[in-house]
Length: 291
Image 1: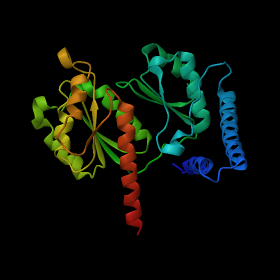
Image 2: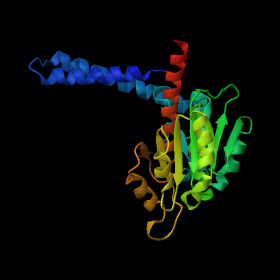
Image 3: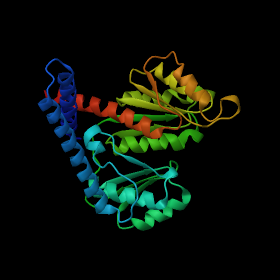
Image 4: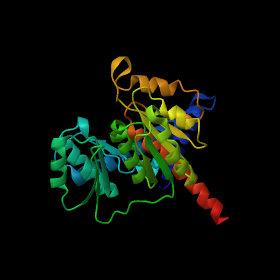
């Protein structure tokens, strides 16, 4: 990750300063003209970059704009949500990300799309997480980063594994080591303590806990551990609180401190949030060790 985002923040600062100046008693036509010129220059630059990127991979007029620079700006890569896209859109976006960053992450692939993607990128390295219906395509020269961050991913039940696996994949692609512990929910809570003890002994930086049904496990874990916990409600369940609603509300209503919650089945959000935390901790750890 680099910090070219500083350029955007600086531009935003200039806009705010100019707006404040424009509304003050020192308002002038020259100041407004300069502001307009900067706005136009910024917009022109963005349009030129988008046009250049689109021309590199999309021969057809598909309305897509893959953001290959997102990871450099924010530390989180763009992920293609394939479930709601046509095969043509999936392939075009993947080509764009490969051209810009050397890697394309695809989530929620439909069964019929998997073979299409494999055929289109058979000369590339492909990594899959079958349970999550996720795939990562690598250009030959791409090297996955290693940050030193360590994430724990825990699921309450085996049925929660697809979403937990999605979170684990994203954290790994952001450079983290991931330790997974599955099927340790509150229906048999004695199963949780030994692997959780081992996880804490390995100096984990953050923990994701995926749970459906009553969604109680994240609160239990958050009440026991001294690291940030990300609650990941899943749409596993039935009856009045089915489709993840009861799990989400239970996590939001927790009395255990240190628990943050993402939306239902949002493995990408949980994985990226936990990885951001872990990567910052790992960076601080390296800086401390170098002193």
